[in-house]
Length: 107
Length: 125
Image (tube, rainbow over the protein chains, first blue to last red):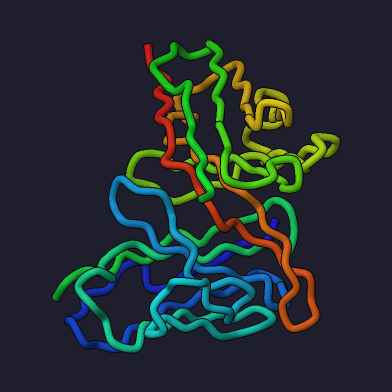
């Protein structure tokens, strides 16, 4: 199975900060990396698919990059509604696997 | 508007069974593979199972293989998860999710684009 190592597990940031979250795959997954945002008590919401494609309706302050084994989710200017937990997902091979999540908290 | 609505969760004793349902609307259900993903309380997301649009192909996580069965009724636009021999570690919110296939930069790619709101399964005596 492909392991997705996500870091950091949590971070504290202020509104307006630039935030970067990374995921490293245990083997090459090309660009089969996706990013989700989850707020407490709600379902995950798709932000980025295919490593760098922005899902329709998602603010442009979110961006993704990477290929092979290393992937990054960047929030260019953190907004109050962005405080949530973020997960990466590899869809290269079954079983699809998620990172353990990054909780973004208010500093 | 795409909607996925799970039901069937509840409290069940260890060793018991439960069947979850996911009612889909707003899209041509039979054209999409569907998955179940679960989240234990306070934990991360775990993919559980996937079924092709026709229902002819199914895939399972090792943690549920042999105990859970995914199925679908395309005439009713409904996805199912039959869960047998339940264990305490199966306690989780279970989400159904639609798998989208699309071309990105000339490459076929896959991801979950829509999720239901989830249904809680608690396995406890």
